[in-house]
Image 1 (tube, rainbow, N blue to C red):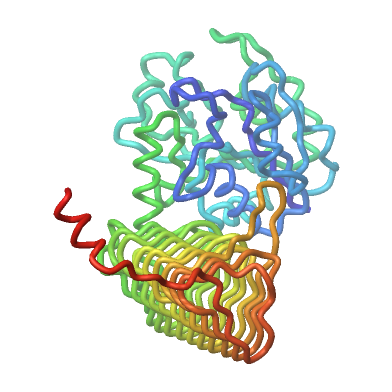
Image 2: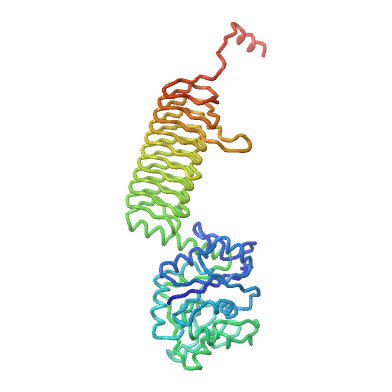
Length: 451
């Protein structure tokens, strides 16, 4: 069995924030999301997240996707693991890592699991030119024997450049038996998980330290500056991966693509585009500058120009924008045109429907080959409740029309420009709802000269 314990109880005071550190956003998702996503690739049997500071905030986000342990007092990493230990079986291995280490890659974690098959405990280490305040990996020749926290290092140990990343893989049977032998006899009076290495070494268990190939993967994030460095690294990695698969990024430095987005080849993404959450972009689509797309699916041969699309599905050969807004689970069928300053909310638009500009379509069901004129509003809210507008196939809605829901406009029906429609319009009928024009001879000239 493979298990994971993710340590996420700390406050992260250097973030200067009321949020728990692991909930700070990295490329569109909280740090802990990235950690758990990497674990998903490993087919972990059980993941336990240790929470403490603002535990409810983390639980509200992760919901029931993981198990939880609670560290009400932050007394060190060893103490955190103690809170989760009862939820582990004796069989299998457990990987222990931090919720603020979001760049770790699945291949690295998998290698750590594999490397521990013949060992009782394996530590992921890194060689740094400037190891700073990290705990040091202490070896006797090539034999790894202990980890010493920087504050407890002597002068010789401070010169060591191999550091502890805080990521471990350990046999469950060993962890459950010896975790409580960790003591708090150090300057901080905390229970260091690092002490487990020396405990096991002295009891002749097999321990090892494995050097990570890319130090960036084990970068811990403690403040906003490090968060920015991590985002730049991840953005570069994600964007390069998509370009290698046939996606064109006009300016990779300004394309923000979430790790949950899927893009087909021959998609072109222009500068200043954000693809956030779970997005799917199909082949031969162009996402033009200043577009924001979140949790949405865009079909083939579409063009999205300077527009915002959230929680919606667009099919094929659709043109959107500039400056359009599609949201709230809208569904747009093939060959639709949604022009500038059009907002579509919780609505469906059928094939070949056109809505060129300055229109609001809310809570609507619109059929095929419908023409929506400029300035049309589906009046869906009476101050208390929302109501639905239905416009059937081949209807023509003139400019500056208000459709007061609930209402149905029939097939081949026409609504004259400037009308406010409060009753259904039957199939094939024309509706006109405006006062008849009256011209006052000479009054315009008189008015202007008076001014």
